[in-house]
Image (cartoon, rainbow, N blue to C red):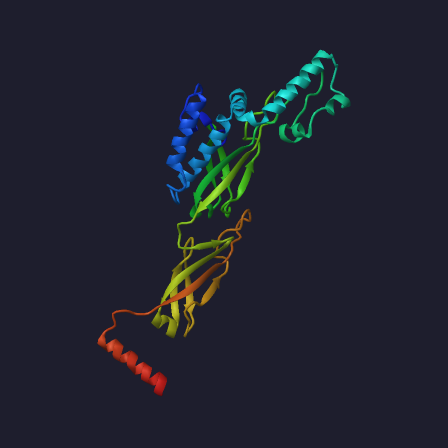
Length: 298
């Protein structure tokens, strides 16, 4: 995601007229509208980008800022103010920025740009780079173990470590991998939001997992041993005689890894679904009738 080229989003050139922008927006908005693309996440994302591009390029004032400052267009007014302050300082031949001059800078520069003009006259104001936001989709099995992955952000490859147990929707910060600072200012940061897709038979609840296991009627009545699949292997379970449908048992430490706690896992909760036998033979039916008589008549 990071810096978005709004001209590319609308499929127009930088010389496009206001009419060109309006026509391109209407055409794409109709194509990707959520009502015409239900449950299509890609179309929904595209629709949002198209609207964002139109809000910027469809407004002449915003478009000029975008053309002049690119990824820093939202800070155009503050950059221009800083330039004017710098010119004023140079014209009045201050030898340095004393406490009075420094007080002219807003808190915005302190928090957003991480720097201010300082030192001798003529030194440029330093601006902190823009923060980038990116989304990374992973399968649930991908975050069961800590691993490294290479991301491409603004045509730059960034190698990151993804800790096991990261949650769906969780955001992590990669310091200094955002937009480049201006005039020697610090770089911005990269914020990555994770979308975890679960295509497994397990339901995740934090670091706990839940699964349903089919249990045949005879094993439920008489008890015995069964082997089930866990997320990363198998486990043997002892079934108690006369186990009821919907019974849940806990397998300690067989759940999902706890975030940033190496070797620590949640629990796996297994719920039994008792399966009634089908296609009974005449002999089996006769035996069940006999059991019914014994049960009800002794």
